[in-house]
Image (cartoon, rainbow, N blue to C red):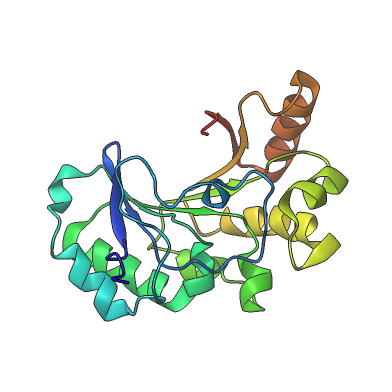
Length: 205
């Protein structure tokens, strides 16, 4: 059986997304990768292997970066699982193209890497977007099913606070229609306390 070519870079609207890894410490009940192999305009996002830095940079040579507003680390996995390649790729994008860079993350990068990784983003990452999902720790554990267990919710909040010191824009998100107005108000209060931006993003199925 012939394998499909794996997709490292793909377009979403006017941004270029980077699919670095399929590894993730979570098994979210709502994760899109449970029900699909790709996004609307992408090829298959299930990777045959975790790409090397050389493979990632070779893919950038195939795209006209002037067409894109932002480069976003987000695919069928948690980007901070491939931290070294992420940082090296971000440095390359900054030096070669000067593009804004965003990481979409579950916020568990410090647990994944066993250290505070936020200082490594300074000067490289313009926006970190963290999935808050819910204001309630117990509900968070039920939804996200992190392998790190009950420490995950507080670790995610702590990561957001750390990122604020090194990254110009830190955003925490929930999904429209999944929370009550009262829960959204609690999420907003959490973000205000952390000094980050709260965003309700559209539902995707």
